Length: 157
Image (tube, rainbow, N blue to C red; front, side, top):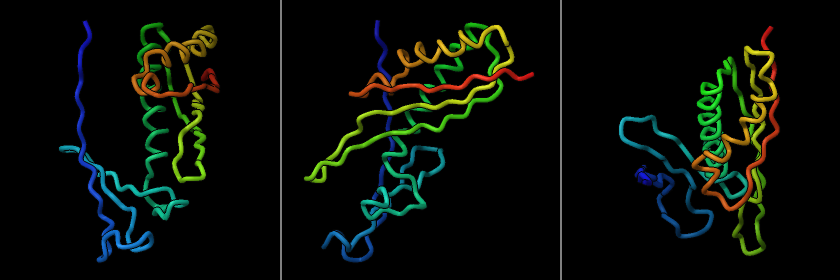
């Protein structure tokens, strides 16, 4: 039997500079993302679309959501296979195409995790578990494009 999980956040536009959206240049793209009892995420659009480069943009948040979901599944699977992960850092990359009319879409994401494990005899299994993590990742399963992996596994000596 399937379980339903419900999520909610509040996204509030904070970029009214006094004229509202009177013109394309009259307003800021700044906004805040919050959820009860959590830190506020200060966001904006990509600087290419007049956004604040000091704030996260939706494209970066998509990358971080995919990477975070994948990492959490990967860590879980490693515990099930007695692999001790000591460090995990990912620097995912995404490609978005913008159409002439201004619309756009992501064509792909590549996760690039660099992982350090304790067991020398489990390097291949540690690599293989990325594919399994991808099949479980809720966010990756919700996308209309493939998420690829370019992982590096090292053993701490």
